[in-house]
Amino acid sequence: MPFALKKHIALAATAAALAWSSAALAGTDMLKLSGAHEVPPVTTSATGTGSITVAADGSVSGSVTTTGVEGTMAHIHMAPGKNMNGPVIVPLTQTSPGVWSVPAGAKLTPEQMQAYAAGHLYVNVHSAQHKGGEIRADLMP
Image (cartoon, helix red, strand yellow):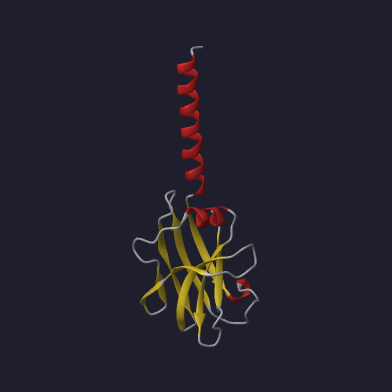
């Protein structure tokens, strides 16, 4: 097989592998937030549901809806590992009472996409009573 053809096949295979791995990271998480998922767990009757989508290019969209909690803020966080807490990477905006939405244009960095692939991102809603977070759900690709 001529060298140029081998090189072309190798480049095509590499491009296909990169496209597949990026697509594998994309996903929509159907979320159920609860105090039991907080770290440490929180005793609360508050709950939440929602959907967060992470596209292959890192674009993030979606929202969560809560009941039984007067949320003061909500975020997507990146933890250093599973069942750990970490810093805010995407602040959510309260779009109506009990509804928190990802702002338009939100996008994860390559490092944050790696954390998403590893299951180290989570969304939580904070309250006056539980400043560190009252309800939480992990984002999983």
